[in-house]
Length: 368
Image 1 (cartoon, helix red, strand yellow):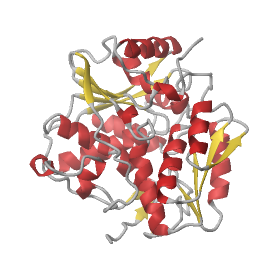
Image 2 (cartoon, helix red, strand yellow; image 1 turned 180 degrees about the horizontal axis):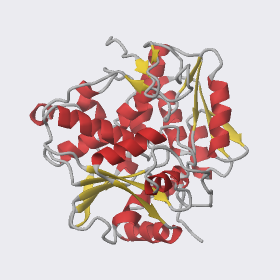
Image 3 (cartoon, helix red, strand yellow; image 1 turned 90 degrees about the vertical axis):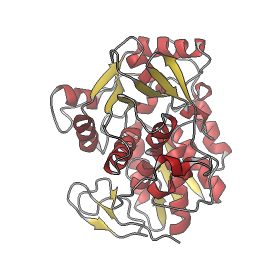
C-alpha cells in the first residue's frame, strides 16, 4: 500500500504525521494542507485508463480505490461561443462533491476510525454519506436547519445519522468540530481535510484532457468554502509545473451578492476578511459561507492567477436557472451561479468553462 503523505499547516508550518486522526493544526486550529507535489502523466498516456477520476492516479495521494462509484469524467458541453459547461451534476450523488468525498472515504478506510463525521449545507453531506455507505463506515452528518428536504432525504437514505443543528452554517460547523475532537472520530471535512482538495482538482485535470491538452482562458467557479477553486489552483500548478500547459488560466470566483465576504475582501484589496459579513437569504445556499476557514488561500489563489471575483443577484440566479433549463440542463440554484455571472458577457471574448455543480432535483426551482 502506498505510504500516506504528511499534512502541514499553511499558516505556521506545524506538521501532522500521516495516519493521524488530527483534523486541524494543533497550534492555530486552522485547516491543513498535504505535503504532496505530484507530476501528472502526459496526455497520450491516459488512453485506455479507467473512465473515472482515478485515471489521474499519479496526481492522487491515494491509489487503488475500493469504494469508487465511477465518479468523474463528466461531460463538457457548449453553452455559447467560447463558453462551455462541465456537467458535474451527473456525478453518482448528483454533485461535484463526490470528487473529494471518495478520497475522504478511502482515507477513512485506511485510518479505521470508530466513526466518520461531516458537516454540510447538503451536497457534501450527501456525498460523504454515500461513500461511507459504499465503504460500510458508520457516518453522522451535521446540517443546519433549513437545509433542502431532498438533501436530508438523500443523506438518510444512505444510512447516515442526521444531526440538524439550530442556527446557520457556522453554528453547524462549530457543533461538528466539537464532536470531531472526540477519540476515534474521523472528521470528513471538505474544508479542513486536504485530501478533499486533491479530489476536486481532478475537475481541472479532466478539462485539460477534454480540451486536448489545453485549458480555457478563464476557469469560473462558485466559491463558499472554496474547495473547488483551491483544487483547481492545485491542478493548474501541477500541469504548469510539468510543462503540460504553457499558460495558467485566470480563476474567477463567483459569490451570491447576498453573502459575499470574499468578494468584499477582494474589492478592498485585503488578504483576509474585512468586518462582519451581512447574511441575507439567498437561493445559492451552498455558497452562503460567512467566514470560510481557507479565506487567505482563496484570495491568494485568485490574485496569483490574474483572476477576479464576481457576484450575482437573486434575480440573476433565477433567470440563469430557467435559461439553463430551457437548454435542457436542470441545475440546482447554487449550481447556476457561475452561468448567472458570465452569461451576459462579463468575460468579453475570452474562452471559459463553468461548472454546473448540482442537480436541480436537489432544490427545485428558485422562486420568489
